[in-house]
Length: 276
Image 1 (cartoon, one colour):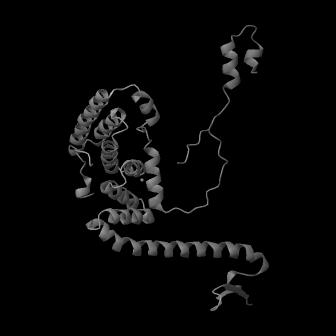
Image 2 (cartoon, helix red, strand yellow):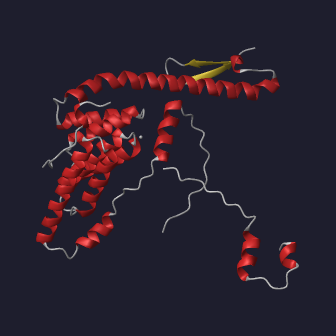
């Protein structure tokens, strides 16, 4: 307790608490959890107890683009998640007519969202699609899939790639034949340098629609980019391992140059030879 309070005969409880806590500091660490052409347009009608994690050390290496994309997503908090459990509970006592009425209201909200999107009012369009998702009954999977996919288009425009991917994923969960949702997610993955995931979505698109031009083009474009990236990552990893090895061997007057790796042509295994 401070000298001020010790020398005071009468103090309030509030003053004591304030005095005891004034030097306390609390630090908060955020939890860890990404110009288009014709695909930009949104659809106006439907197609058919928690445990505490142990702290971990991140030793991965990230390039400038990855850091930029992660920072963009950190700045964009996910405030428009849909609580489907609450929606399910709220729909228990609804009649079929009431559900149809809610569906019609959701359609109206979607139309308002589409108009806002066309006017480049992307925040407003997200709000309208979210309102529609909160009122559209869960049984109307295809309509809800369109709402998620349309919302992802607005998020993509705002460069909220992680959340756009999340909405596209929800859309394909509701409608696993929804080519546009796969396409939009593939675009987001490619923008955020997740090339393998992007390629998988393009493959899925071709299974649904073998004539899809953008997917056909991606099947030619992406594999060389993936191979180039993998070679670059492997080279960077080897360089870092060499630096680490040299640091360890330096006190002994050695370096990685004193060790030669040879591959056995028969077993395809490797052996390391020491040389002075």
